[in-house]
Length: 301
RNA sequence: GGGGAGAUACCGAAGCGGUCAAACGGGGCAGACUGUAAAUCUGUUGGCAAUGCCUUCGGAGGUUCGAAUCCUCCUCUCCCCA
Image (cartoon, rainbow, N blue to C red; front, side, top):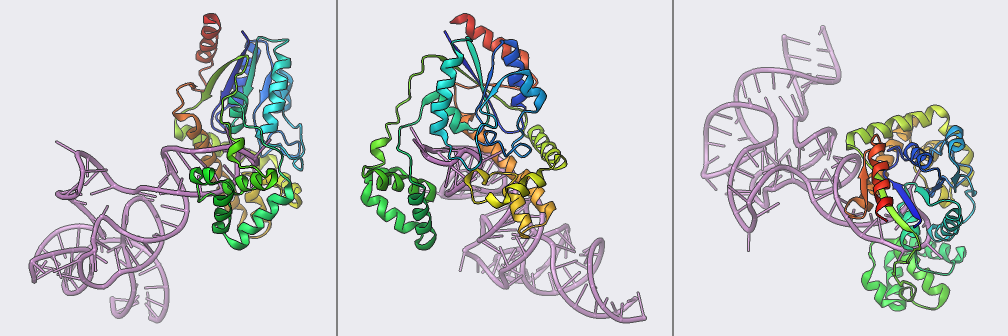
């Protein structure tokens, strides 16, 4: 039986270090599940593994794309599954690590097939939202896909726009694409997540952000400033600096906001799996517990 | 030493006799989530055995059927004049 070991958890908890130790222990490789570390222009602000870490274990999906490429959870699913199958020809165990919960979900459970959306169409809908407000979008969705209209969060423009763009693009309802069926994978998935006391996590986040600043996050963000409109740069650590560059806030405020927004991001990540019984929680210092847990599972199978 | 302004929940800040456990903002916490997901959106935020009860609006008294709101004294902060 092939096993995919998922190691996730909030940002700054120490996933990289743990994943490397686990991968070395089981003599295998690491697939990154991080929606921002895939961009080669982003290093400091996304805390990509350093050269020595990348040399210690082979990593995939780090710096593989450009911020101007379109990438999303569905593409990641396709790419990752293809890679996982290839790696399983060589290894019995593969490690998947990262904090992008939707990406991990796409690999574990699959995501429905929906045609690619024309960027212009999306833009038009965005403009419509800006000019006419959400009510106009709701009204259209109610007509085009009443079933989904009943289900969606009607206050969330992103959801409504997405459903609408699918309807307009395909001429079919968004509901018709939402099979919501969990895809069966031909390998076992072991879900683990790292976590610690909230205060400890906040300390880790603060020191990490300070560290990013000394490493030159400001300059990295400045280089990205001309591309600030890209979704890939709607990212904690960059957008706060963009506001600073535009004189909207002072630098100290930007740094403070990066810390706050990172904390919030960590909280959202925790919410994703907190009540999921499939997930085994481990303290990042407790690698032995994690290794034992994995070995026990292997022996049972 | 003289004059003035103010002390409100985690923070900032409204309220100026009942409809106040107290607007609003921030922060915190909780949650949703299927192609933008480090995104987007929502709820909650004195305590509890909770359609009610208890303790709160610097402190101590007082007026009143009733006070965060009025009066007296005290403590502290800020500003102006000396």
